[in-house]
Image (tube, rainbow, N blue to C red):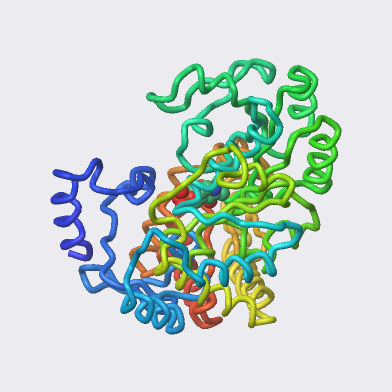
Length: 429
Ligand SMILES: *Cc1c(COP(=O)(O)O)cnc(C)c1O
């Protein structure tokens, strides 16, 4: 049986870890079946506990942009580990990675390191609220900013009512300060700014959405958002946890040419170790403790192993002038190949892509926001997912996730992926 050992491990895990996993998407709940348990990975390939091999299009949800077990990263972590793994005191390494990160991302003076994207976004919102002395934030439906309470909010009935908790455990009190708008919909934003004048501290957005599939912003959308934030004295937070150091050295800010007031990072920045960060201009950052009164802290923040992995990753990205165009070309090859296979097959689909983020949606209408992403044919997606997995192609186990290509994938690997799709395509009709 192909997944025998994984299924035994999953059963054991379920007895003592909720759902058998430490993060819900790993449980394969939306696609069904048994999650594969990974033994190791190298380059573009994952090896599971049953001895199956896969081409990896998840890349740990983004971080492994250079491929798994990338030698300079492994070397950097090993060397750091020999010198001790945590001190709770500053290291030169932190300034080194901060300096390189700020060189790569546009428009920011200072950066603070934390342990996850969740922490980065949570802290960015606190900073925005403290700096503007306002309490409300606007987020977009379908954008994910980690699991802190302020973000687990769904739209109320009608755009003008405030949100309600999307998870038990989040209080109504928290929900009332998070307003929810539709992605790519300016009207929603205008209504909210009009309804809550001088109350909105910040608008937080994934500049290219990656948590409802890949959804690029419509032309002019982010520009208008920038304009409306300025007009209303609100800060614009770009959540670049996904897009940072992935779409370009300077992330979406650079690629799309729009400046945010605060930007959050994670994923690629940690090179596969737990890292998040938020960056801003000095006039905003100066409010943060210990310089200013807005509190934020972390025992393991700036951890030397994590900083070593992050620095080795950033250095590789910084020194390789072709990496982003190469990743985009590979992803385009995948896009073209999928389109060729799907041609005249009477299977409605959309492909969204930006740089090395891409998603396939089984629907005939353009996927521009959460609603249109949700109208995709889930049954067909699940068949597609399992059909590909059985042939050794590991895609994200949910139609709401983007693929993240890594640089270790070769053209040959991508062609193999397209051939695998060709083999199962008739079963998807
Ligand atoms: C993954 C992600 C987060 C959360 O990061 P964690 O490290 O999982 O806490 C926040 N925002 C975006 C856009 C993400 O993709």
